[in-house]
Amino acid sequence: MTKSTATKKKRIVFCDFDGTITVNDNIIAIIKHFNPDGWEEIAERTIATELSIQEGVGAMFRLLPSSLKDEVISYGISNVRIREGFAEFLAYCKANDIAFYVTSGGIDFFVYPVLEKFDIPRDHIFCNGSDFSGDRIEILWPHPCDEHCDNHCGMCKTTIMRRFPAEQYERIIIGDSVTDFEGAKLADVVYSRSHLTTKCQELGLAHTEFTTFHDIIAAMTEERQAD
Ligand SMILES: [Mg+2]
Ligand SMILES: [Zn+2]
Image (tube, rainbow, N blue to C red; front, side, top):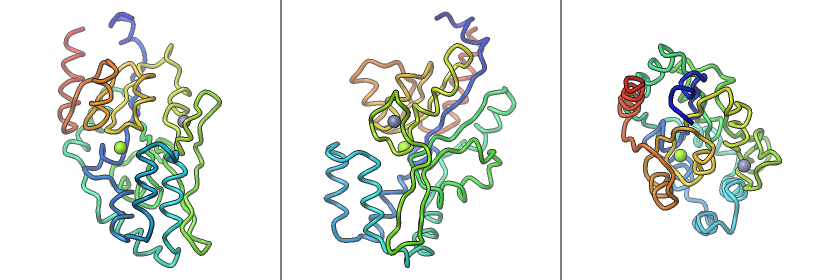
């Protein structure tokens, strides 16, 4: 694919939330803070891929009683720090007609409130759900894997990406972890940090490292100027 054909396509960004838009990883921070018996074993088995992300996250939250609802929600929100340059990056996307979507393995009760001030249309935010009506916190999975993915992602990033075909879109992914890697393989452009960078290096996938969203704006601007 040459650059000139790529640039005729509509650019679309799929941006991870935890550890990407935010500085920290919220799911682990919440679980660590409330520290229910048995969470560490579940986390270890998830990291070792004995459990899928969906099974691991579901099981960890099931350790918490729904009576903790208000505390869990307020901790989840207050714990978040937004990565530098995020608001500027959203403005850059708007000014340059780049569609912006959040594809997050995070959970509605912290993702939506944290993003509220950024004026992102709600239907551009994909994340998991939550149900506090039973004894225990139950995570809901409204965006499961389609027939092309059997990773039991929970919130399936590649399923969302496939709705925007490569023939029409230049697909750009921004992420930080191994759970972004399948999406990175589908994408035309990858902006990575942390574990996603390592994984891209190991498997020889082209990527641009970033620390702040200012880095991404600079890289995108440079690429445009090179055309
Ligand atoms: Mg992440
Ligand atoms: Zn999937």
